[in-house]
Amino acid sequence: TLSISEIVLAECGSSNCKSLRVNSDNYIGVAGKSGLENIGVISKFKIVDLDKNKADKVDISIRPQIYFSEHQVNARVPVTLDYRLTDRIRPFAGAGVDYNTFNNQIQPVITGGVDYKVNKDVTITAGVDYLTETDDVEIKGGVGYNF
Image (cartoon, rainbow, N blue to C red):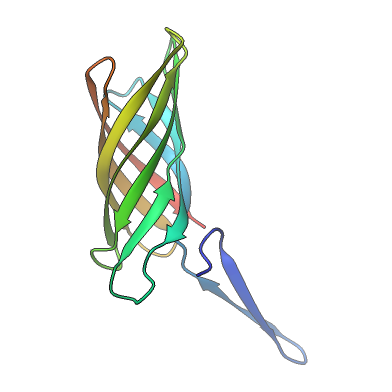
């Protein structure tokens, strides 16, 4: 399965070339979390396709994120199981680590949410993160460019 980056297949004739973009499950974009003062960069990269027999519809992804606010930066790297409910709707759940520059703290994070593929170029995402050490619950949402 080819899924790490956008795939372009080119078919060149005598005087013209045609290209076909194969849709990918990867994206990079912008997001906000728990208030408008936390703006960030989000991404999703499928790392394992568990759909060996075309019936499982489950993938493993890594979702690096970085959020900026007035006094701190949060960097998160969760790994998620993504379920392909339909071609457009993909709920996910997983866990990873969060690093906060304000108090120089690393802590576990549990995450869940849903990606909605608007079209071949755009995905919108919404989710909830639970930070286990500080007992914080954060709501997030964003939009990404598929590649």
